[in-house]
Amino acid sequence: MNPLRLGIPKGSLEQTTIELLRKSGWRIGATSRSYFPSIDDQEIVCSLVRAQEMSRYVEAGSLDCGITGKDWTLENGSNVEVVCDLVYSKASFRPTRWVLAVAMDSPVKSSAGLQGKRVATELVRFTNRYFAERSIDVQVEFSWGATEAKIAAGLCDAIVEVTETGSTLRANGLKIIEDLMESNPQLIASPEALADPSRRRKIEQISILLQGALRAEAQVGLKMNVKKDSLEAIIAMLPSITAPTVADLYGTDWMSVESVITESIVRDLIPKLVKAGAKGIVEYPLNKVI
Image (cartoon, rainbow, N blue to C red; front, top):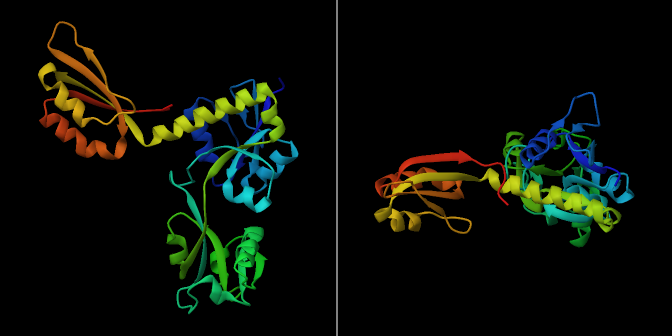
């Protein structure tokens, strides 16, 4: 087949996405001067495309697939297939939120209180639909950026903005009054690309490995030596995808035990394992969990 045309989001998600692809098995060489990063896979060609435009290019067939936010696919109303959800953002591995915010001292407590008011946002179509579904008449204006400052400047009465923690909004004297939508990156593809068996195979390969790399972000491998008479107690303490791997240590009454576990519980688990008799405990990072 001709190389699969893969879109990588340019901007805030760019470096996180390139790093995720690296952990998935692809080396991408991107420079600030090029919109066509190199990739060590002859079956793929990459293009850097703004996340806001990605779904339009995939729908048009200019790209076979791409990674973009669920929010922008909904905003564009694009006819594309969602291959998989990829929950990460520029700063963390959790979804982002589109929220409705007003000035901290505003008496408005909900969207209903904005009847006849002005709302600034990048997400114009979605915001118009949101208010129309609630029969609230507002004037939605497109914002080119620095949206958080527009209420203080008197340019609008409320904003619809994306946030991870809300800290930037609070720092600009704003409060959230409603959550409109939760969003995360998605691997999307054109129906035509998925109808082609060779392209579908490649897209599914990308999907499997990207999801595996994301699962690995929150997990680690744990390996230890355990005496046979302590084995059952140790196994009972270890969560695992299926079951821990256990093997004899040559010529001894010790066993090697290995498991994949959630990283956040390791700090509490290791002291308990030591107390139960585990020795030589090794924690190691993972690239992919599939």
